[in-house]
Length: 638
Image 1 (cartoon, rainbow, N blue to C red):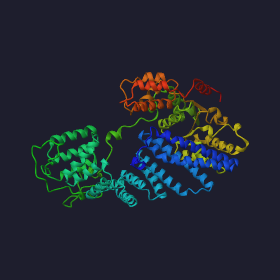
Image 2: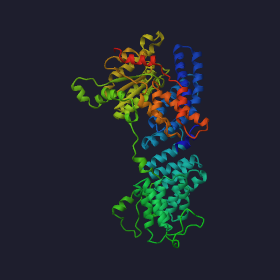
Image 3: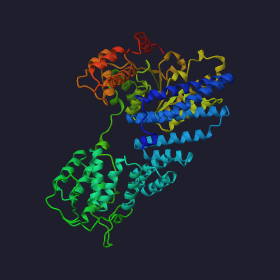
Image 4: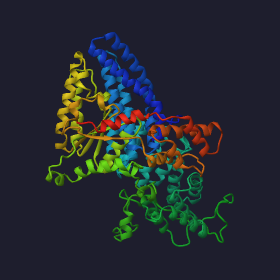
């Protein structure tokens, strides 16, 4: 659904870099516009706004590619934070447009509807259907003709088993675009949940006429055909699906049920064993239980049919039987998914009957996908043991055991400063810290809360802290914090408003820990931060984020190469040894360049020779004197 909405992934090796260029320029142009506006230089301000408008158009076209790329790398929280920040930046841009009397209301509405739809699709991917529905509703309130928002909302409602409401939503989607194949599939899913097999079959067939490449619809249509007793057609569809996806347990189990109908007992057992090997719990899937229930309505030995002569996928059966005149009756399922007794008597009360009350589900991820938890928190951080130990001792333990620390009059962290060379993962570490201690995470960039209105930035700072309080316990993270709280002695007389902004930040910082909010700032230039921020009780905890150590560099190479064809003899220890004092971003670039070189050389895989070539060709973006400066800052008196 997401890739269909975005038009597929952009043809770029790294959409982040592609997006970040114009987006960074947009932020800079916005800051310049605000600066010249405050200076009263209207000509320069108008010129800067024109540059902002140009960069806005460029970045807007690349947003979907960026989010799609991050989802593809399973960076869901990163993608969500990116969307939040982008929305805030665009909001500032539209405020400036209004200030310069440029009418962008229609573009603003369509853009925010688009971004809210992206957010809804992302939240659905993250397994948060209720919050996703809220985002889709926001998008539809802005633009009720947004088909993707209707479809996304319908799919989220299906996840919550709100089948009838989902059906109405998919109908609304089709009223905006009859040719939307996703809407037809969603309609089929809702009808299948409700037991309306014939109508569901019609919906899936329409979807396949509109988009025959959507193989998932073949699996769902096969389910309908099986339930309706059209076994040969079901077999054709399930075979088409398995040619593309041979790792779906549900598909293999449905195939085994179909083969039972053809009397192919041996081949049926093979298909069933494949299904169980993929997912040991597949037999308890509600859809399978429903289809087995359909099969149980026929007496033993009946319902078998002869395969078409042109089907060579199944061995000839030792016997064949005449087709049964009995078929499963889809309307024997009432809206609650329970079997209605033919004699009109009371419903079954056996445990099997209780299980059958669950609605059939057209598609679910395998149990392996559902149960395998991805690593979170510091488990994602390879190496860097000294840093993790420092964080555990100075931050995590006091937050987890506040009473113990208060007993000995040991202060609980109120604010922390992460500093170090650029490209060494400060933001990544903060996110993993939030996961490690189970805190909500809010990321703030000073450009996203800047305002051209008097006192506007002060109000935005207060609102951000209030948001953190509302979601407490929270880590509120200020990236490039030196831009928000610069040294006041370096400010000019015309920047009196900055004094007010710094004071507001300090006031909020003083009270943060009382509300279970931990303030974290990150900077590459710690010497530019106002000294008041570092006083005791404020952001007095300084944590140095150094370049990745040996184990971390090994892990970075492994992660970067994990999804690329690689030789078996790659010496990761050697690569880590050769890249001492390299930033994380430097290693990512080496891997990217090695992959590009493999393509240019028409090689079958990335080998050690190519990697060594790119290590030798590239240089670290860091120098030892720069690293020494950061290490010295760590030991300065507060």
